[in-house]
Length: 185
Image 1 (spheres, rainbow, N blue to C red):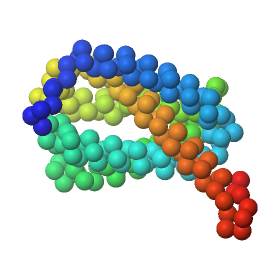
Image 2 (image 1 turned 90 degrees about the vertical axis):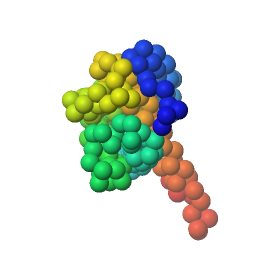
Image 3 (image 1 turned 45 degrees about the vertical axis):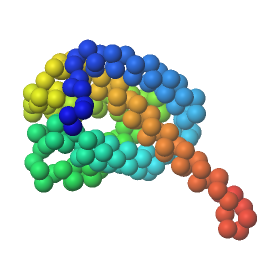
Image 4 (image 1 turned 30 degrees about the horizontal axis):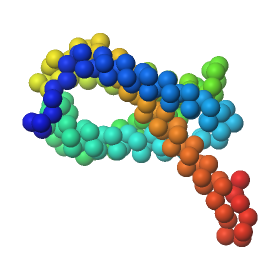
C-alpha cells in the first residue's frame, strides 16, 4: 500500500494520547450503562462479541490491509486466512477469563474487563516485537515503548466495543416481543 504513510514513534505517542481520551469516555459509558447485574448476565455474549470483533479486526487489518507490509513478514503465507479465525477463538477464550476475573475483582466489572483487555495487548504486541515486528520497513521508525503503550489504549477501545456489543445484543434480544404476544425478560 504505497499511499500509506509509515508511522513513527511520535505518531504513536500522539495516537496513544487521543486513544486515552477516547478510552476515558468509553470507560465512563461502560461503567454507567453496563452495571454489575447486566455484566454478570453476559456470560456467553462477551466471548461471542470478542470472537466477532477480533475475527473482523484480523480479517480486515491483518489479512487484507497490512498483510504485505506487516503481517506477511511475521506469519507463513498459509496462515493469512486462518489467523482471523484463530485470533477470534483466542480472544473469545480470553473474554471468558477476563469476565471471571472481573466479577471477582473490586470495582465495576465491565470497566475491569475492558482494562484487562487493554493489558492483554502487551502479550501479543510484545511477542510481535520479539519476532521482528518493528524491523519490517513499514514499522521501522516506531519504538517498542510507543507501540506497547498505544496498543494498550487501542485494545481498551476494542474491549469497550466488545462490552457494548454484548450488552446491546443481549439487551435487545431480551426485550424482543415473543410470538405469544409477551415480552422476553
